[in-house]
Image 1 (cartoon, rainbow, N blue to C red):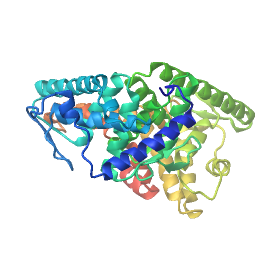
Image 2 (cartoon, rainbow, N blue to C red):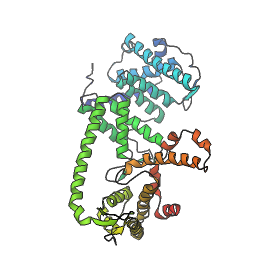
Image 3 (cartoon, helix red, strand yellow):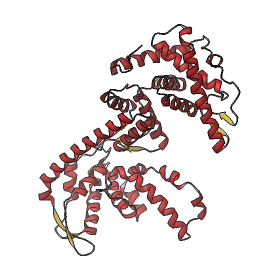
Image 4 (cartoon, helix red, strand yellow):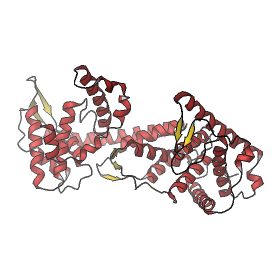
Length: 428
């Protein structure tokens, strides 16, 4: 039997073989193994469940068993098992029947709770994969996921550059989505605790699907890592998730220490006294300005470095300036950069955006950062609807909707496409 804790190179080799087996089966004219008959499960259509999409198969326990059985057969073939008798063993057919019935029971429970269902093939395949993962058969779940990918696309995806969503890295560059990199990082976490890294592909694919379904245009790296943690725990990989969380915390602490050292080196010369709204005075160290510049620079090809931009935005800032005048001066200085480079139209718009966010949302550039924007928008949206109804400016019917679900679909990263004129016109 193949070592379940083989190194990552061996696992990758088996993945290549498995993909070739799936390709051969899809293109073959030979009849597949009859798992529906071998398992003895019912071929009667499940009541109140219809399948939509490209595939129009009638949803039945027999159909589910056939799909799961084919995934198991592909896996065994990739491991060198060619004899049908060794594939259609009583142990294997009983296992396939068991998983098929688990999926069937899950579907029937959903019908009982929510009424008739219309499922896409992808929905059904995901339910099967979930049932397999709950049985700790990550290898079969991966085989099924690869088949689903090839069956729908006609090829195996090595990364997800075709997704419109972009990833915002910590250095504020914006890069295309790449599922393969998420899988690689997740595999390292599995290997670090001595576990089989095969489920990393399932976790990475689940993260990609969640990001794709969210409809966001850009997503921060911290949010992606949050999703990886959630998917690891959702699939039952608690030891791996714990290691992943601790590793993230360690790296975050190191970055914070490095950043603090940099701040301490430059803070003395950059601090000035400013007046607060209540008449008191406080020191302004410019850290919030650095954060705003980093936020506004994300994904832009500017002809000035962040340090050079900071010098430009600090022009005419004098001691004992009021906080409100400080805000106005930074925005004005950002606006003057429009003549230096075309991308500064969006840069200056984003600088203004950070102040608008702080004015209308429970959000602060230092406290919450870019990664806290989505949650702030969700809270602000719900509060706005509730307040609008209270003052009779909005219809009470809006409260009958699932406001949390609507709020979760908001994509604040879309604001990044505003240029200064557009956002300032809306604000005014």
